[in-house]
Length: 102
Image (cartoon, helix red, strand yellow):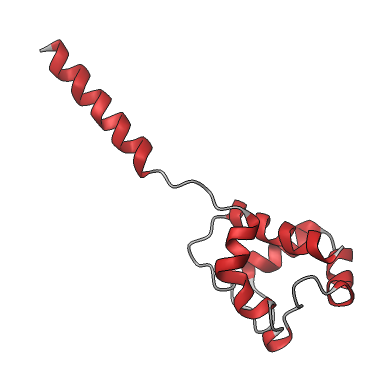
């Protein structure tokens, strides 16, 4: 009986671990989601690595940029095109775009 319970618990723990999805990095989120607008500058989105376009945004600080990525601004809807992104993934994507524009 004890063996059966131990195997059931071990199986449940393994299933939980395998179903957890690893958080995507900033480049991965940009390449699959953010590029849709930021590669071409759709609706005024600052283009990727465009130092002049990003400079005033970078000057507002990372907290403000992360708030925009989460809540949206102007034509950008909340979370942009990444409705399944976590806050950490959004922050990583913002940091990736900011780093490219420095």
